Length: 284
Image (spheres, rainbow, N blue to C red):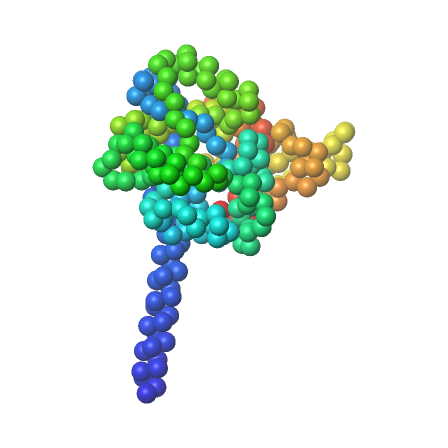
């Protein structure tokens, strides 16, 4: 009897652990490469790059790109189809902090009524993107939900037209554009099938130390000492609001910063703080 009980406990433990670990598996997603001038823009669909939280619907739950389950109100996902969708949780331009705060909460609140799921792909093997786009756009149109929307794709003919489109979007508060090759078959990882275009480059770094401010920034943050994934340390002293200087990112936080090229020593030029990307201890 005791042996049977032990075997039962071991079985339950194995079942729970395997089930939990499967929920933590990172989803296979496509990642965008940076834009380069020698592409043929006629081969691509163009869409706005939404500055939100990447979210993958696996037919049952929403996950982050890291594989963490996103706690949503039941009404938000109850009518989603039993098929994979890939998109961005977003509310409006310039509201990343609000979006991140809302989505990261374990107990979803009323702020979710401002969140939209902007779908930009429905991963299906061996199906080119232009057909995937046609299929998921029709699917979401049939759902007729105000908070679940297909990202609109455009077609243009020249790089000059692409530059003009980027300028128009950025002037109106957009982060940039995404180019998706029309005939691309879905596969995970980075490739030239998916390209991001921004008016600047951005990257991530970990906060190493706080450097005190001087003059009008006395008793506040002057700059952050940060380190990139390549181990390059440098200071970021611009891009902060007064509130962010009074309550700066913590040491250990991973931040996103913008920059315009690199020095010969691989130090980002004209680096400017954008936001906290991953709080210390978070895998979000």
